[in-house]
Image 1: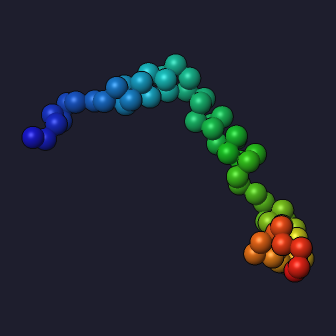
Image 2 (image 1 turned 135 degrees about the vertical axis):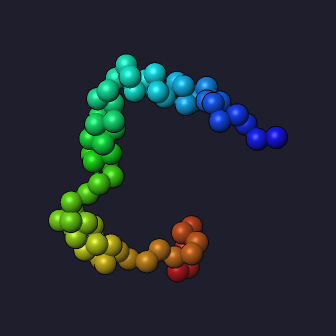
Image 3 (image 1 turned 90 degrees about the vertical axis):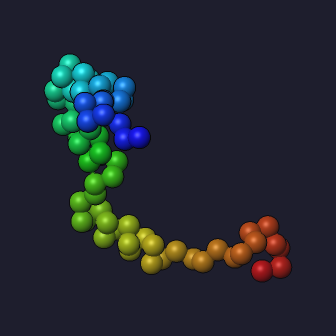
Length: 66
């Protein structure tokens, strides 16, 4: 049986109420994401340069013979 079209889950109701109480929440989430995930191209270029200079790790790091 399909749920009623008027049905809203508890989660949906909670999220709607939260967004009404804190309308700036979405902007805060975007700012926080930008700090940790969205990197400008210059930082990505530096990271790629560091990756090119890495020395490959041996398959078993505790093996003294390699």
